[in-house]
Length: 309
Image (cartoon, rainbow, N blue to C red):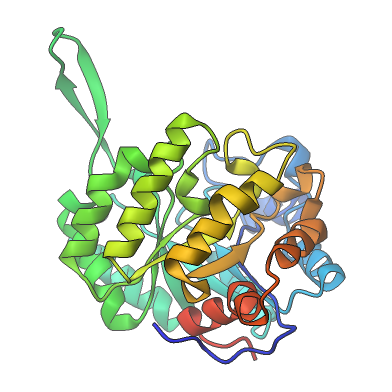
């Protein structure tokens, strides 16, 4: 995958969320999904206006808004932000695994026409299946994303629509490793993005998962990794330099800068010592090479999702 032209100073935040504040969610204007209300301390800190202020302060040109679980499959708040600020925001929709194959593909195409440029697969939204283990106990397991006709159809259609698919392996890459391979094999032309370093923490379990991540990315050139949510890597606080040395630098060596992109995970990053602006500055300071900096800070995102104009 070749590098895209990007302004050297242009920063694109490839991973963040916004949701309605208390006033915006009242009177069912932009309601929260049942049981998915935002955490109280961040409820009024993740609105479109709050994000715009943080982006301006950090000199961030544009952002890819990942549909938040707080509004679940109601994309109206993100759509509104994209409509009001088309030069600032692009969107990544959230796939609904409860839909049939035809419904899911139709929904994908509809939201693509409305301006969404990517799709998020959250494997924990797939229905759980119950099985009996060797001890005779009932055990709940995740349904593999690659095992459903709707999931596979949407994943394949994304290649045809030039829409990357981002996967959130929140409970660790290892849990989803075989499932990811099955998806990659099912549609080699679909770009797969792994959020937050693939959730490979800085502990023994995370180190093993990171080796899997490197193996996966080396074998499948369509895999891209987000250098995002530094604080979500287990044992990464307070020494963020371990993230640089043990995660970013090996990824740069193995994948190159054209398959990496920065993301803050706003608004959750606001609870970290670096906050929003500091996180952008920190990752920028880790990238000494001009070409690396240009790609990771914006070029990769603009190549995959189109330019922010």
